[in-house]
Amino acid sequence: MQHHLFFILLALMTTTAGTATAQKSDPVRDQLKWDRPAAPSNDEGEITTIYLGYTRPDGKHFDLTSPLSFPIQAEQFMGGDIYEKDINFDGIADLQISLGHINGYGTEIFDAWTWDATSHQFVHVEGYSDIPGPEIDSANRRIMSYDRKDNVVDVTEYRWKDGKLNVTHRHTETAERDTPAQADELLMQAKALVGEWWWAEDGQLPSEIQLILSLDIEDGVLYCNEATIYGSTASFDLNCTYINGVLTITDASAQTDGLSSLNAQLKLNERGDLYGTFDCTVGEHHSKGTVTLRMK
Image (tube, rainbow, N blue to C red; front, side, top):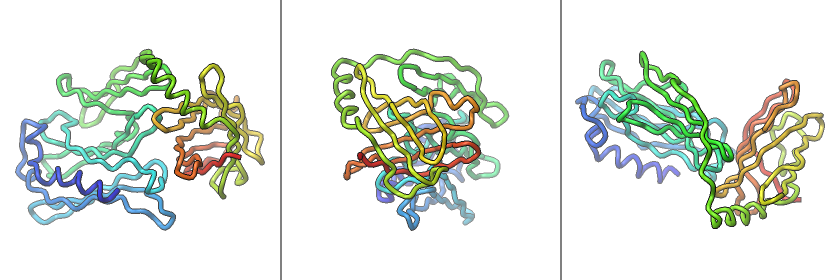
């Protein structure tokens, strides 16, 4: 991944910032020297943060850090791409760093910094990583988000005001239906997941015991017919989608007390296990991190 990040950085270093995507120029911004970006692994082989540093012509150095929502095994990490885009429409190129995908539909999230031509440094955009799949609409000076959930797309419009992004409009749309060939391919992929999956390692679930996830198919639709955490009375109502090799599990409705939920994004690894990130709440206990599930 660090090798991949390096080649993305080369594009930053060999093009004048703002000439390709922006109309204005800042001499300081144009003369920045970039460090090699890095996504180092910890002792457990997990990536938790992406780093990118730069030095101004006056010699002052700055570090940009992008923490991931969950620690991810290095071989599973699919983020880290760095883009120069004018996201606040002031004519000077800003920065986006990909934090990876959040569902099976390819929705990507980013961390972002805008360039401040007065202080001559990048300023972090709070909450930008909460925007699913941001698309820069320069013609209308807005940022659009299209977040697909099954056959529904949540569409959100953001505009800048006083240096902050604000939601200005929301609505839902019906997603385009898959073609018959796409539907057949998805069904074949989903059939590989039918069965009973068990927690394969000492994990971080609030019960500290085990998660059992039983998946099945009915009328061509993958669904979860059992999700049990031993040692607790938590119950879940889960939706499953499996697209582009990613199984996304979302809690359709929390327990009536609103204190139990389970969400996960998993992929089949070379061993045939389901591996990925999860976020689980049982009662007053909340836990998130990585999980491995193995077919029993």
